[in-house]
Length: 337
Ligand code: 13P
Image (cartoon, rainbow, N blue to C red; front, side, top):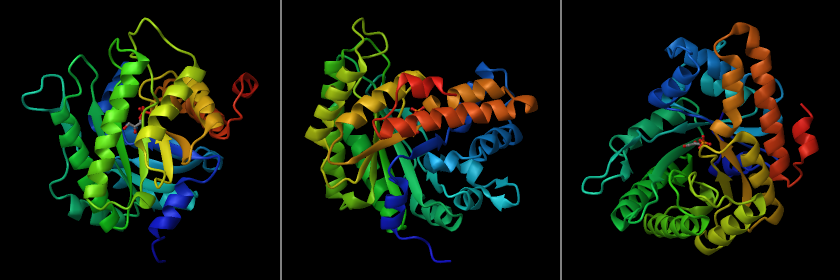
């Protein structure tokens, strides 16, 4: 069967009323999340957990695509490859292709993302394995002098090369510059930093001739730092987020999908709902990792007897977020488990 066109993959990922499940935690990250729940992290336990997530009955009603980690795309789910199993369940398989972050030399507290070496070859083999979209994450810490322009430009350049190489390989890039929630900064400071990073990222994308219509942006909501004394309601988050995105994201980008970044699951849904009610020139949706998975993982905790309950927890969060994308989420929907 011929591979779908890049346009059709963009359209499928942005199916109205659906979002993306990020299940692409690196070995280190999933190891930490499992350890916090005393779940042993082995190739078998990680596969068992992700199989539980992906085979949740009805998930494809709310989830258009799933981001995998390198280990998972090489594993088998039942008698199929992981990508084949997802495709068979009507969800588009994607793959995280960055190799994590490392300290930026000369800039204490800042990071740059690794993974460009050999990327063209890796993309070709991921395409052969059935992946149809890719993701690359850059992180920006917020502080008095952070992010530096050096950190922004190094990461913007890498994001743009990643996106250009993905499109060359026939894959839809999800470009993810994440402004971290750690710290006591205000929502206004987050807005300023998010706008500055997005402007640099789009300048770099255009310079590398990335086709904006053939990519998605994955960004954080504009939020006060976790330790900021003034926390805000969902309406204020929506207002700041949309003001910032309208300023910095070209309307040619077909879709913006939000990461959850460590927000509580229900809070992330409430804020997504407020953002999507206001809307923008792009299609808006979610690409959540923790906000979709946390309760499911905690419910499972490695126990066979809890598989169904874990799947119910995931399905509920996916359904609530799918309602939020349509601006139709409510306390009643949350209570309706
Ligand atoms: P969170 O929603 O947990 O932030 O994960 C999304 C993601 O893909 C981070 O790269």
